[in-house]
Amino acid sequence: MSGRLFGVGVGPGDPQLLTLKAASLIRQARHVAYMVNGEGGSMARTIAAGFIAEGAHEIAISMPMRAGPEAVGAAYDAAAARIAGVLDEGRDVVVLCEGDPLFYGSFIYLQARLAGTAAIEIVPGIASPMAGAAALGQPLCARDGTLTVLPATLAEPVLRERIAAADAAVIMKLGRNFAKLRRVLDELGLAEKAGFVERATWPDQRICRLADAPNEPSYFALVIVSKGEGAWT
Ligand SMILES: C[S@@+](CC[C@H](N)C(=O)[O-])C[C@H]1O[C@@H](n2cnc3c(N)ncnc32)[C@H](O)[C@@H]1O
Image (spheres, rainbow, N blue to C red):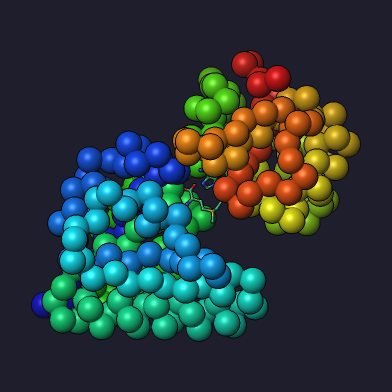
């Protein structure tokens, strides 16, 4: 019998924002996997550190994030094969996922590779737009309003068109695309209706108006634009 694969959302940063189910699964896990960045750090592991049992086997999965799609695909293949090896021994594996596993999460690529080989259970987590909205006290949508979620990596004309059409928008993955986003919001006259949130729910969380945001925000940052009631200014 194959082991079970759990994709467990650990929320946006504050360990108190893990669900009871996530905390209990992590505490019981003998095999815990997570993605690590180029510097060897893992946001998901840092968030869940207090719940990982002593002696648990840890599977750190390195992702060459800045590499081309082929290298990234090969890294996911290798990670899936490593996890499959543990599952094949009949052991469960808990994959720690920052925020929610299925919301721009790396778990999506592991799930696609391991579907059909093991039972998969996903435990949702609090996603960063919810944490960001809470930090700003910014309503996301009400009544007939809609919410548009966009990565800032989209081409400038696409970003402009989608933000112009949105009632409210959350823009993620700012990084090197932040200047482009600022330009678009200025052109649309929406800069004053945009709130910036960096490292939501962390002790060093920062919130401010878009105008006061740093030119080079951390990877863990997003912008919320609201044209409706309760817009953050
Ligand atoms: C690959 S996506 C992962 C999203 C994650 N699965 C979630 O549910 O929020 C990474 C992006 O999420 C956003 N993000 C994640 N955690 C955040 C936090 N604590 N504060 C602000 N933005 C965050 C940033 O825009 C970041 O570039």
